[in-house]
Image (cartoon, rainbow, N blue to C red; front, side, top):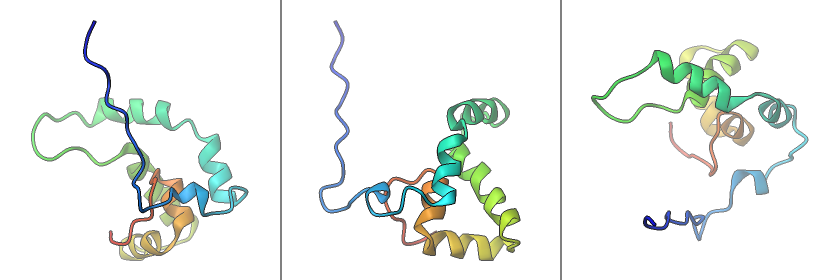
Length: 101
């Protein structure tokens, strides 16, 4: 018998994004259709490193180029739009609203 797994509790003063947005929004519906776990597993095989800081989420790495192409934005524009748009943040896998890139 090993130690119990720690229970992850939500942030006491922050509400999850999915509790604050319209779950019928097209990007939320698209995000729910994509098999993110399968995509993440495929991407992890290509980006293996045991050095440096922890890797960026594969969902963010895949989601930002999609949003950039879908909305015809530059690199800088997609980053700033991501900060301002909670639907984009949900699409790329964020749980809580991020206020900085």
